[in-house]
Image (cartoon, rainbow, N blue to C red):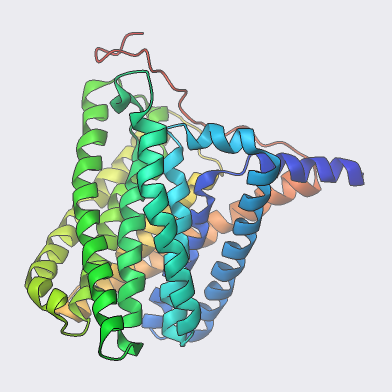
Length: 366
């Protein structure tokens, strides 16, 4: 029995999805939103879940890298899944931003340095190793919603940097934070445009099957929402030269991105209906479902912050409860999945994930 349990644990570590830190992202951003709305106790519970999830997933990822390097490398080189590694950056920054509101500024700074370093390394290595270095062409056929996590990671660094601004005295530290926040936010804008074009080309030029519309496509909306949140936090930063130059532009573009995120919500809901109800793709637990919960929570928090920064009457509080309900459903499904797999030894059906088809031509034929 012990050997069997050990083997199931090893199998779980071997198959750990690179995007599982989306669980940390979703829990952390909901903790931020609940704190903003005055629900301190519930916010603290989700903060504990967020921090515990970050620590556990970090340990499991290091274990996987050490024990199952081949599987790790295969996913790192797969353009359909490699961008999921950016969830580590975003999850770390979301936790950092939440800790900043509790007064844990040293921990926030340490996590910001860690996430910023990881963002710099992954931001160059992943696109090259997983996309540009591939021999098969066209690579655009592999573009999917996970690519938007690259944008989320960039904007999350800006959010964490802005979160430290109120506690940093005037001088070099404040200037450095303002430069980091504005630069990362600006890079995120260009990345969103680039990824948006590539994903749109994949959807228009290649056959789009229901199985291809995986949950991470919701990150397209989440990337917009975190761009709004980062913009709102930059608008609230101290009046350094860098912030003073861009404050008006950042505030205006924040509203534009919020409008586009709002427009995307019905489209994504309709895509889910088309996938699961019209074409019958099974809806069951998989780690990528956290890529739906996080955008919902981020949209709610971004709406709250934007309404506060620009004095706009937005309805972020309503969306916060929608996101919390989604979190509760997916968290329950995750617990059931873990119990069934590790304790009872039952294997759930494999998640529905589109197989790579590099030979597919734009007309949809093989």
